[in-house]
Image (cartoon, rainbow, N blue to C red; front, side):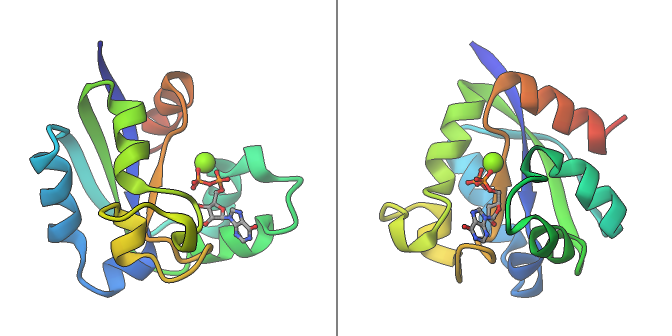
Length: 133
Ligand code: IDP
Ligand code: MG
């Protein structure tokens, strides 16, 4: 099934100029970038975006981090895009990410793990709508 999912290139990766490499990696793996923009969000917006994590001990740091610098938000489209993107990203903690995944290649730590990806079709819709109204 052709799906859409939201991908974010997080501040650590934008700062290291990894934008083009990450975009090419998605395209080489048959995920089309159908919408893209670079933005800087406020801490309040980060709180809203990550509200599913509001009870977690790392919520405040996570929201500080996502709002700390420019990010690139993208809609990825393709066959099984949600799961495909999760596979290309790798595990949340780069230490556990499989060889060849984005987080293995570029992630610095569990918080500076370079990319975000929606974890379900429904959350993908909500997240796409958050950035591309
Ligand atoms: P995901 O990004 O792989 O979907 P989630 O569990 O949804 O992982 O967590 C969202 C983000 O919160 C992660 O990408 C990571 O940056 C951060 N995070 C998750 N778990 C921890 C933790 O235990 N300590 C610090 N940051 C965390
Ligand atoms: Mg998640």
